[in-house]
Length: 210
Image 1 (cartoon, rainbow, N blue to C red):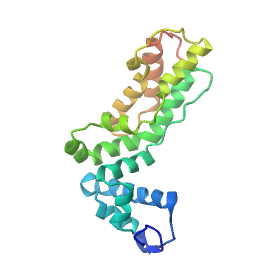
Image 2: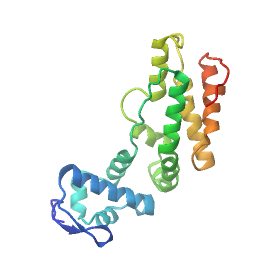
Image 3: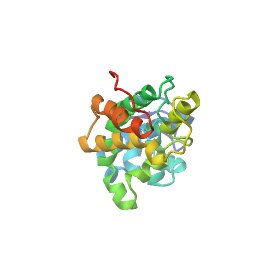
Image 4: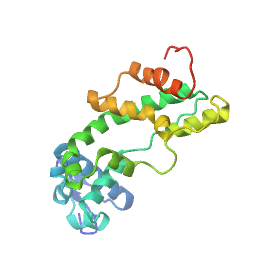
């Protein structure tokens, strides 16, 4: 690949890569960066390693991401996709749908980042929470959105509620992911919603089948 990042080059696994430009090129570079991070961790996450994996040169990377952290955050952001916010017409079903999506899409990713970014957290003095906040999309957090909709429907009374209470299901699931080093059993998701969160919001109901 030429210094402009385009051209034909011998890419990963010895295959011949096609000419890539713009977003296609950037996506390929970030995919290569992600593969290096997954395989080698932060200690092996270097411009040299990513350039070699992508079949390009370091200047191509530097022009887009001047620092190692810039490249890391861009790669993480590409794979830390926003969760779709359900709108089923029921607060309970919205919460369970959201937790199940979180469990399926983020379970492995959270553990991977905890393990592979240990050196990053040590070197930068930051935490996983700090990183999550940097990757979090702009806008209202999902659980606050579904509670707001429940209030609009009349399912919940309009009342001040602590962000800690509103976001509690997410925090509990993330805690269980880290404790179990993997996805959380579905019955635990149901218990979090029915036995912990809904009662805290003032909804006390018999527990239906999930």
